[in-house]
Length: 307
Image (tube, rainbow, N blue to C red):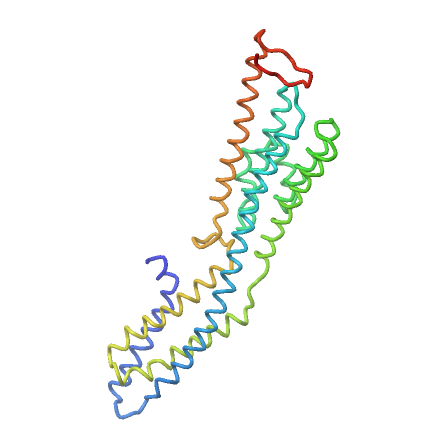
């Protein structure tokens, strides 16, 4: 409640001050007629309700679209790592191939963290320094768009794997399609971030809301006297809260409690991808352990099987 009311404390203070001054004026100048029909502020309030409903729906659509995009990022990150772990040819279970897959997985985790930080206008380098090599950190520093630079490193490794015949042409195309979908998701997030909700629309709503609050005491003071002060304050607070809610939802990447939880989603991605990698490395360790025993023989398809 402290956080919620803190967002409209200035507005509530102004409304309460205005209604108190209005009641004092009405109390000492009782012979001056200041009453107006309650239907007038009622009609204005109805108009405000329609405007706020439209704005809230549009703001929620932006927030929900951002959440859908990050849901697709979760799926595509899992797909990318799964493809790299299974497509990459490594019949000998070599240390080099294991390191290649580990670096690729951690770089994808770094991409998720850097994208979330970049959308929030925060340092996109800090959370990824421990996930990628120093050489790669220096490479991405030279780019204005850090997540895009990380995708470029992905593409570079993909080209190297194809050159070394670790991937065939069809596998390279499939992984590249996944990278393209990740790039599309990044562009969609940037579109939401950089598209400003029409300022004139917000200004018109605020002007109409202020008019409604200015007219409301004229219709209630004569009926409720001093009790109109808390009632008007509560009514105004409800309208201001709805307006603030819409403003916060329309910008889902501003590092607010109502934002799309990009850091939490990135943590989930990290746990999932590291589990996939650890399972692969466990298989790698088992094969290496049994490779030293005579019960293991090499099959014609270059895979090891325990007799």
